[in-house]
Length: 256
Ligand SMILES: N[C@@H](CCC(=O)N[C@@H](CS)C(=O)NCC(=O)O)C(=O)O
Image 1 (tube, rainbow, N blue to C red):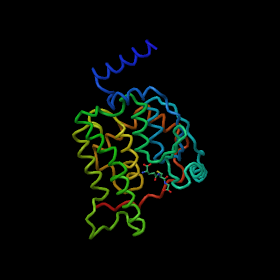
Image 2: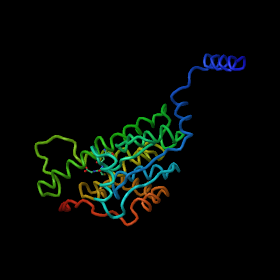
Image 3: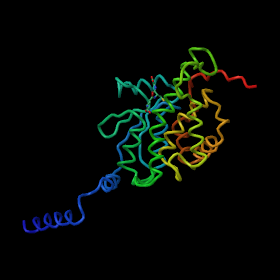
Image 4: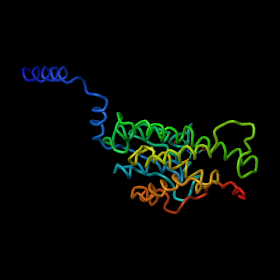
C-alpha cells in the first residue's frame, strides 16, 4: 500500500512538473504497436496506396484480392463493406474503414513513429497537409468529372465552355509549379502526400485526361517516386499481372 501510494504520488508530482503527455507523445507511444490490418484490394486501384505505405514503413498487412478478377475482388469487398464497397476497404482490428487518406493518417498516427510526414511545427507540414487532402478532394474529383463529361460528349477533352470550374489541366499546372520549387509534395522529403498524389496523377495520364509530358516537374517527380524500392514491391505484390480491365482512355487530343 505504501509503495502504491508513493508511486501514485510520484506520478502526480511528475505530471505537475512536466505537464500531461502531449498529443505528440501519445502518438509516439501508440506507434510502438503493430497494426492488425487487412487491405481489401483491387489491382490498379487506390488500395495500392496502402500497400505502398506499409512497404515504406515495414508494417505487416494482409492483402486480400482475386488476381486478375476485378468482379471477384469487388465481391469480397461487398461482403466486408456492403453499403460502401470501394477499394480500399480495410479491416483494422475489429473495425472496418474506407477512405484511403483517412486510413493513411490512422496508420501514420498510430504506427509510423513520425516517419513519412514532416514535423507538425515545420513549414513543410502545411504543404504536406494541403497535398494529402488535395489528392482526393480536388485532383481526383476534377479528373474524374472531366473524364465523365468528355466520355458523355465523345470528345478528347470536355467542352467546358460556359463553365468556370478549375479543370484537370489547372490541377496539373498547380502541381507542376509546386514541384518546380519543392522536391516532393511534402516539401524537402518524400512523404505520404506523394503516396496520395501519385494515384490521381497517373490516372489522369493513363486516361488521356491530361498530357503528362507537358508537365516536366511532375514527370521528374513521378520517375523519382516510382523508383523507390517500396513502390516496386507494391507493384510486385499488388498488381503481379498488371492492371486487368483498365477503364478506356479518352481519344488522344489532336495537336497542331
Ligand atoms: N476517396 C476514396 C475513393 C475510393 C474509390 O472510389 N475507389 C474506387 C477504386 S480506385 C472504387 O472502389 N470504385 C468502385 C465504385 O465506385 O464503384 C478513397 O480515396 O479511398
